[in-house]
View 1 (cartoon, rainbow, N blue to C red):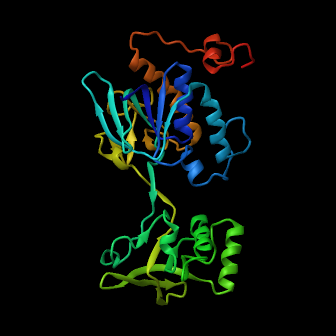
View 2 (view 1 turned 90 degrees about the horizontal axis):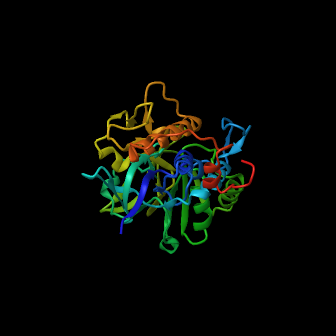
View 3 (view 1 turned 30 degrees about the vertical axis):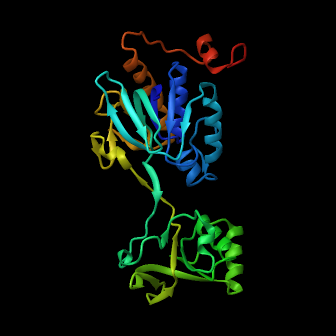
Length: 344
């Protein structure tokens, strides 16, 4: 049976999480959907240890700490959280409600849809090089799902972040050879990981290369290696039989781009009263939306979530009078927050 809810929130980053809170204060139920394996969006996936300085009342807070605090804040409202799936089908029905179906087969019967997808879904940055389409399928990897596949193989690992360094260290135990290729001598990974890679390179267990990928070299569909241009503009071929690419994640609107929403430079146009899109009942908050004067700040997204919550309430219950109640003094808010009899 479809999950009935007042709102499906697409995106479980900080703004999507705070949207749960604002809806909960108005006694509205929300379900969260995100393509990542954990909540937090960019904060958790890209820079969990990054300090943030512009969250009110926090002179400084780590990105992951912010997500942890938001999760604690929304706990009283028990939102459904559906990870590692994208919204695949989106349909507004004749009754004004929405049918929303994810890639995992999760189906929702939603009163509204709130898009809080940040910059979109995060997908691996792909290798794009001349000759790539001439090699057999399955020789370029963007994640490791079967470590044993690489036993005894000559591997080319691309990247300079934690994933590239950690897999270089790990696979060095079983691979025949590893050539680590990064665009510059400095790595972005943790110092301990960098030290391990340097130690392996010092023993000849792996080889380091700096430069840009120029083309894929192959013969009869079999990968022979990669031609790179080093920092001195010299070209040479680094031999290998399988490629692992760890260049991080890139944002992609994904299916949202095909929902007939009014877009401006891959951002969703909204009004500044309701943060409603060109489709009634569909709202967009955070970095994914645009309007005159838009500023891409988490703080701005929190503001948008508050106003969107009232708009969602009005959309679902047009005849109901709206009251602005304060969490400090309202017994109703205290009950919803689970702080009856406590200081709020």
